[in-house]
Amino acid sequence: MIDIRPFEGLGHFKNEWLDTRHHFSFDTYMDRERMGWGPLRVWNDDLIAPGTGFGMHGHHDMEIITYVREGAISHRDNLGNEGRTVAGDVQVMSAGTGIMHAEFNQGREPVLLFQIWIMPNRQGIKPRWETRAFPREARHGKLLALASGREGDGDAIPIQQDAAILGASLAAGERVTYGLEPGRRVYVVPTVAAVTINGIEVPPRAGVAIAAEQMLDITAKAPTELIVADVP
Image 1 (cartoon, rainbow, N blue to C red):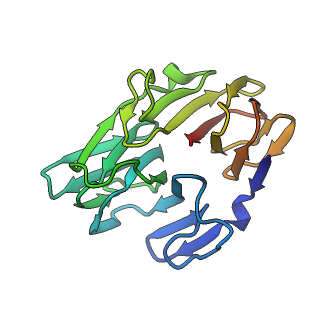
Image 2 (image 1 turned 60 degrees about the vertical axis):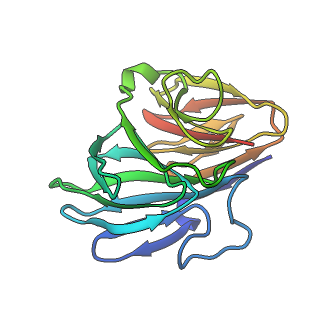
Image 3 (image 1 turned 120 degrees about the vertical axis):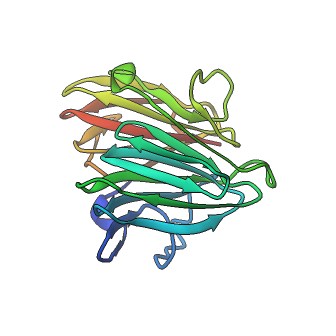
């Protein structure tokens, strides 16, 4: 099953500083047919204006993965963590028993990012935050684990779930394959160009919910990044 969710059909919210699309129900956007994909609960495609951002607010018992597409996002939290995550890199916040944080675009250009929430497989853990660089050349033509709770995923930032967020940088015509273990599902989003998945064309920034497939054959129509969530 390959279910394409076009960018234009996603939930949409816009104010003076944030323009966001919701792949799943979130905040004021409610679609009971799109409450998540397994433990993948949120996938927001955010554009944040310069000099603005999310003020201090709290979360608990959620794994929050941020993949920065363009620009940089600056993080601050009540645990004393401060850091900056730039385009192509990833930050992970395990909210656990509770964390207060703020995320700001301190640059002069808009920030584009994916905000991905995964429900943890254990609640009440100690909250933590981490950011890590993932050079794009390390994932040219292949899917690289960026955040993961699975064994064997190398330098991926750990998360509290048997799941993984993977990224690939693909040139025009470049192809990657990805095998699904029985009972697992994936969610795929290409960033700036269309791809084909098992021969089906997927527009940029569309979401693709996939289950009951043994192998994915993905080819880029033009240069693009590809972000994949593999969840139970």
